[in-house]
Figure 1 (cartoon, rainbow, N blue to C red):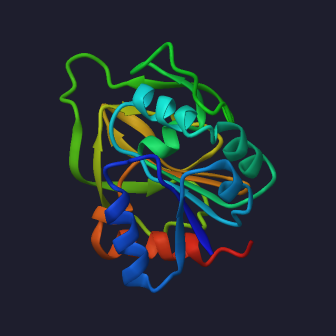
Figure 2: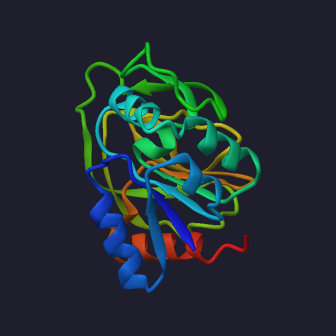
Amino acid sequence: MITILDYGAGNLRSVQNTLDELGFAYELVRDSASLVKATKIILPGVGHFGQMMRALDALDVRAALIDRISSGVPFLGICLGMQALYESSEEAPDARGLAIFSGSVRRFPAGVRVPHMGWNQIEPVRDSKLVDGRPYVYFAHSYYVAADERTAATCAYAEPFTAVLEWRNVFGVQFHPEKSAAAGLAIVRRFAELAC
């Protein structure tokens, strides 16, 4: 069963609706004891990096979440949920990310309209378990992860950035699959059907 970490994210209900539409069972958890038993985890994300990390710490789930990801449990971070995988973000320099990966989340450069809002096309850069083709998906963000060896697909906005991250058991999407119509449903389905 899929575990959704409920720390109060604004897109939580939309993620639940997506899983309901696809017919996948899930549970909402808000504590370490439940998270420790998770066999597949989704971390939704909308809002501010610092607020999210403070919310995770207030629930005392940081250590359990890092442990499950490090233990090989399939993980999907959505938008801010993907950014949380890094050490820090320019949005909240004093807030510590989960540090699954090194590096910092960056703000789009001055002169670029932010947030990057609306439909945009993603471009696969290698084989992907989540994405088929070059779909248009829905974005809403002002901060991004630079493309690197973990990038499975990019999107061009000022410069190419990581739209889809895939690294072993860790998956992340900068866009909102729960707002991305048929393409988003297909991405969530592929994650839900991954062998554990």
